[in-house]
Structure formats: structure tokens, C-alpha cells
Amino acid sequence: MSRKPAHHEEEVHETKAEATRGQEVPSPAEAPAVGIEADLEAQKQQVEKLREEVVRRAAEFENFRKQKEREAAMAASRSLENTVRELLPLLDDLKRLMHHIPAELQAMPEAKPFIDGVELIRKNFNGWLEGKGVKEIEAKGQKLDVNFHEAITQIDHPDAESDTVVEEYQSGYTLGERVIRHAKVIVAR
Image 1: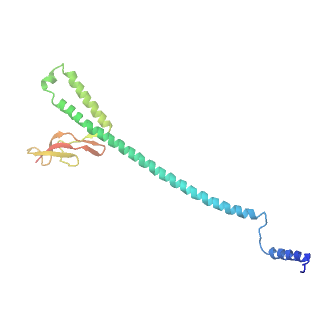
Image 2: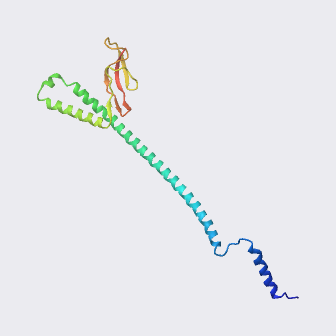
Image 3: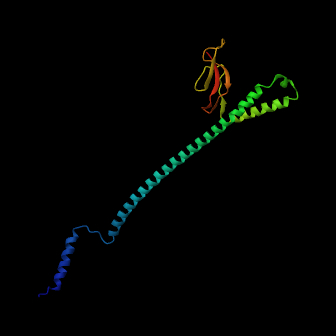
């Protein structure tokens, strides 16, 4: 067994040192900077990914909120429409009552407060309906329009053109642009 001299190990170290002098090897101070830059780039990508996720979730929430607002508005509209439909027979009764008051009752001073009270109730009720966007459909004297009128019968009428409304049996109403009850009418042949 032969022993190598100690100076041979020094030569090996010097040869390695000379070999690495021509190459760029990061110094111990530069090595952490390369790792930090890679971590920073990974963190930037993660932040961008999370930002896109937050933006997408915010858009989804905004769409959800708008959909719920539309649904609530539609529910309120349907509720109002149903309430108005239920109240229309009351308005019909008030109109019939005012139309059929006998002339002798109208002439009696004692009946005047009663008649005025019923008329006031009818006007207030009409005002409430108008405030909600309800309008009566014009029928008498108009050409029959199936979008607004429902003909219940036809009669011969010498003073009216064919398909003209000559009498209104029941008033029709719209709520906004929507017909909630067609006017029931009698038309000329």
C-alpha cells in the first residue's frame, strides 16, 4: 500500500478551482437571489390566478343579484296584478250602482249624501288603481281589437260600421302595457 503524498490533494483542489474560474458559478450571496426571483415569479402567477378567480366570482355574484332583483320585481308585479284582478268586480259593482240609481232617488235631498259617498268611494278606488298603473280600456265607439276587446255578441246597428263596439258589457283594464282583463263588448255586424 502506497500512500499518496499530501501535496497531491492540494493539486487536485487547485485544478478544480482553475477549472471553475472560466465558468459563471453564482457566489454564495447570489444563489439565494436566484431562488427568490423564482419564488417571486411563482407568487406573481398565483396572485394573478387568484385575482382572476375573485373577478369571476364577483361577476357571478353580480349576475345572481340582478337575477334575484328581476325575480322580486316580477313577483311584486304578479302580486299586484292578482290583487287588482280580485278587486275589479268591486269596481264593476260600484259603477253599476251609480248607473242604476233611480231618478226619483237622485232627486231626493236625503239621498244626496249617500249618492255622493258612493261616488267618492268609486273615485278614490279609481285613483288608487291609476296610482298603481291600472287604466281602463277605451271600448265604446272603437273598432274591435282582439288584443283589448272580447266580443260577446254582434247586433245589427244602423248607425255603426261593422266590427265597431256599440256597447260595453264589462270594462277592461291594463296594468302598464299588459291587459289584465279584456273589455267584454257588443259589436255591430
